[in-house]
Length: 167
Picture 1 (cartoon, rainbow, N blue to C red):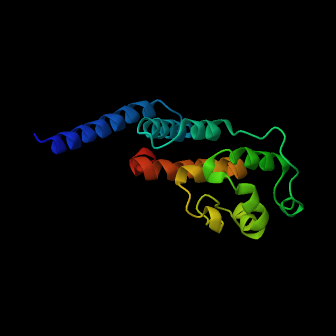
Picture 2 (cartoon, rainbow, N blue to C red):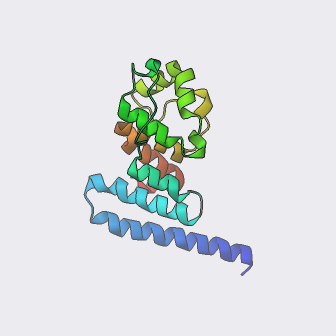
Picture 3 (cartoon, rainbow, N blue to C red):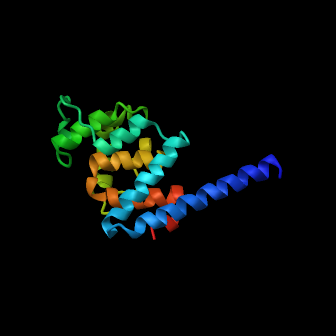
């Protein structure tokens, strides 16, 4: 067996064992908990493969807030509250979101449109954040639209692990 075919075989075995283990676990869960377990499995695999950083995962799970955020610009007060603003300021500690508050201020109409979208998890983000990863989109949704996180988690798991983990 060549090294390439051996590596492929090992990857297939890992995927098969992961899915079988997930299936056995899923049988004992309530329906509402299945997405949580699928997300935990996905995040653990991505962390092990070094596709995610632990500080970003912790930020997603905890939902950090800036304890003393600067005053919110008046143009944002029409659609954001103080808690969301504190979350946005805390999110700026992640390099991908370094200029989030500046973008919120300069592109407030695009942000307001995205924020008010019924399905924000699939709606287009404003131009400065259009190309962020699904995981970073999850982080943004967790901060600004926590009501859409469950649907976004389904999209994330489907993209990373496959639809069979969500069905």
